Length: 405
Image 1 (tube, rainbow, N blue to C red):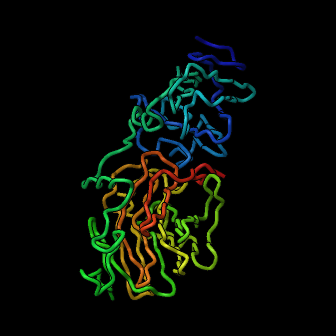
Image 2 (spheres, rainbow, N blue to C red; image 1 turned 90 degrees about the horizontal axis):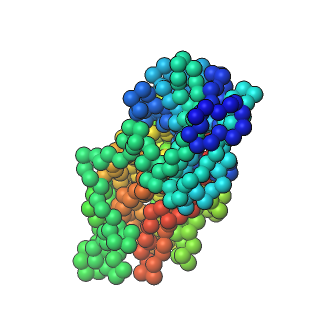
Image 3 (cartoon, rainbow, N blue to C red; image 1 turned 120 degrees about the vertical axis):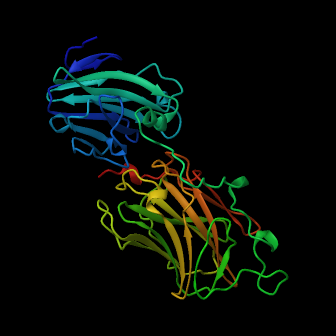
């Protein structure tokens, strides 16, 4: 069914476009919009052809996502691209519960895409801009996906979840890491009390999968370094668990209801970007550092690695994220995130946890990952026995990826 230019465009309707600049807006603010650049075979050419909040520009520069709106320069679209598939998705609830208002502006004409007939879906293909007879046309699609953004991406040829050579260990019950041996509350006993505790070290050590916790000397300043190979742009932040159960977020970007705060008193401080390599071309190592002064009010610190707005698609497996705990420059423990899957859609990793102990700093490997497509921070819970439980995806929603300014 053809429709005349301008006005409401019903589901299934199509209209010719002028072939110049097109702008697509989706209300209300906060809805996630994305574009897939699809070839004649109905598939994308690669992960880079998926334009979304974490990758806001297509390889040819024709499609850009900024401020929640999509701009398209049809004259720059690569010749191999036959269709631009425009979608919207929600993190919680359904798209049917959102009063979507979609407008496509083409020169002087404005086309309103009528959205309806949805129920349990979390993602909907709003429309597509496609080539026909050497010209461009717009179609109102209105197809919902109960499988969400991951299901949509998979349908168009994007590998959403491809396990790496070593499968990630299943999460232990209740979100706890495997308990360290001996001691009340699961903690290793202090040296000399029954079974031997972890060795105090004077060297560097790597905590592999299933390694026991390690006790470090407590230096006046302990540095938590989240590092990765260059070629991407991750962010590090920390959940600071206080002895009264309060959790303080030390981060350079907001989460829902939690403003950015790079410092907690004079005890925990985010030092900002350190040692940045070339994000586009790679080369070298990149890291972010969080400094901690372990005062008695701090029970533990949970460092978090998060894939940032400019990292494009790429997995924790690909960029080899590590957490290093440096105690005064003499002792260091490294936790590699080496059980990660080859998934570009897992955005958060908790490599380990650092406990404040009277006899030192206890470092425990966790290596927990968020679920696919989740933007929620982890939640840290202090239990009466002193152990901190980390629950992935149960914290507030990050707003950093949505800030395309």
